[in-house]
Image (cartoon, rainbow, N blue to C red):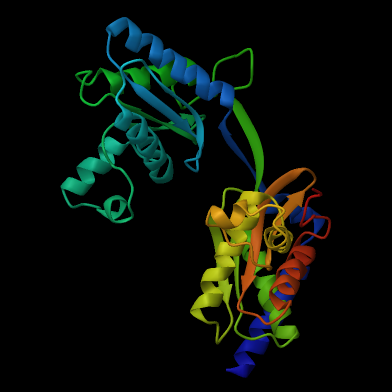
Length: 319
């Protein structure tokens, strides 16, 4: 087993340090998402149609990860429609499918995963595409008071503002899409391997490492022998927390403990040292978290991995 671990460590080191300027561009990709302006224009288009056809509606537009960009309820919309509109939009974004399709697949027992994962697969949620890429999603609710017009309204509004989804959006006075840089799967793997290599070189056992995108979605995970379940879970929690707050979790830990800002604690995040956002220039491209080590080992391992793979990246941002 030791021979295997030594060979795996050496292979990881070779893979990490073989990264050159020639393939550095493959480590970061561009991702597009709706702007706040585009989200608002879509909602306004549907609200105008709902007003003409005299039905109450609530609308939510989210980014590709399901985070809310814009929301509006019309006069007369019931309270629950606002909540369900957001849930439908998030579900459509996360599964990249309309919630009507998910609803049908659940009821036919083709795939009940959305139900069991706690999502809201009720018709009225649609992914929004531009140039064939999912750039967000919309959710609409009318509490059954529109005769199905609310769903037509949402789809028509998206088409009016964004187009057919296959081509780029039409010209607009303000940008409809934002472009962000994100880690590729290959980069995430190299980061995880680099942390494992560091752990092997420094005889750190029982450590787990997670790499996430800027929204906290898991891209890669790896552990060493002997990693506890706590180490496995905490590595991902640290990475997600660093991504959400755009700060090293050690910084958040200090701010929480000195009562400078306890929001991460109260929001249910995990501000325990060992998580770092990864900045290339001014862009956060992802985050890394390590868990299960002793003392400062988690932080040392995660930060060493970033420096090995992205020597010029920053792992923190000034207050």
